[in-house]
Image (tube, rainbow, N blue to C red; front, side, top):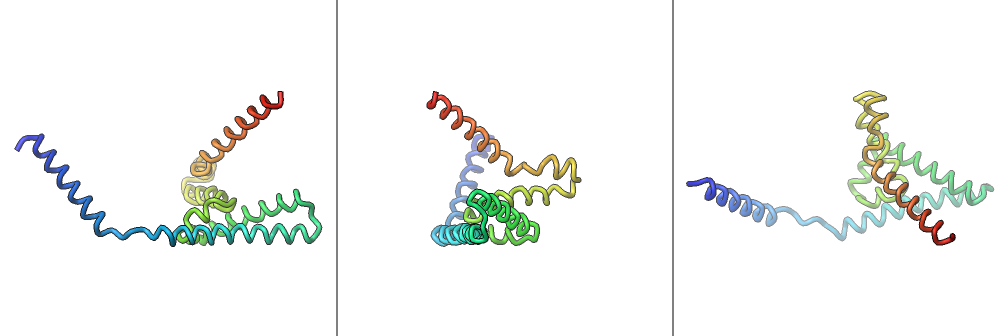
Length: 155
């Protein structure tokens, strides 16, 4: 057998293997995953709204209450990540736990925990934004572009 026929046989075997794997692997419960994401993401937002309403009721103005609510939600996301609970929530909820502000806190703290064993300078300090960094860069670039467009439209 020449190299060409060996390659054809190998490709046929790989194709047959992938066909068999696709037949036996379980189908993901897409609807169930969407429902869980909706419920968990909604509950995170409800918790944030409860905190905001409480802060408004004790006399804070809307801007201060919003800022403090964000700080509390980031703290809760970081705390739950540090305790190992946010990852369990993320396994069940998927994008429902990633989208709110607590998901951003989770990304930062999870990176810090992962790289802690490499040291505080070269581990945590150098790599803490490895997951959330691209999101920050995209947000900064988008905000600058939107600001420039608005500046041009006003002028």
